[in-house]
Image 1 (cartoon, rainbow, N blue to C red):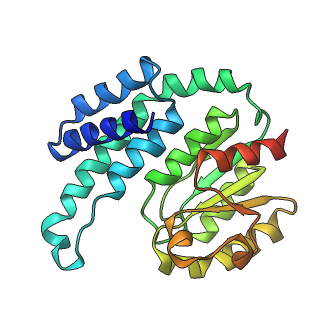
Image 2 (cartoon, rainbow, N blue to C red):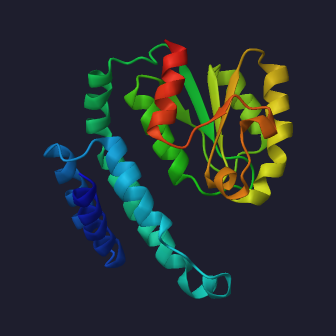
Length: 220
């Protein structure tokens, strides 16, 4: 399986580099329809590594950042096309998160949203009502959204480590306004800084499908 995933990753990267959106979408869907991968395997083994390989030097951002944006758009197109498979996999897992709502967001000044969108799909596969409210979400907007949606769980994703500093205040405000709310963190900033849930008084860290499965076990 590992070799097949690696071969599929290399082929998908070739489509990204050539900016071939239709071919990339068709290839990803063929892997799913033929049962070669599940949606989590596609996201974690192919889509995420294909994006994470992109490195744009800061002194070349003006000249090269558009390439990252184009490739990110292709990945998002693939994710959108995966929705029928997400629904079928949800039925296969028996919807352990049924009746639970999850609100997912990136805090203010955090614009990297593909990872948390993948997380939303992972929650949907397990039967949760998952609502991604957006990137660059101010604290007051988070609080208003939580008041309207009344989630059981909130997931905050941070990729830029500079945005970690605002998490304690956000989490404190959420807990004061909504006692009993479970708050989880996600994003590569935690990995790169070695920070964990305890550093921010959060309930846990979610970065993989297996992490979401553990949350669903608590929800049952």
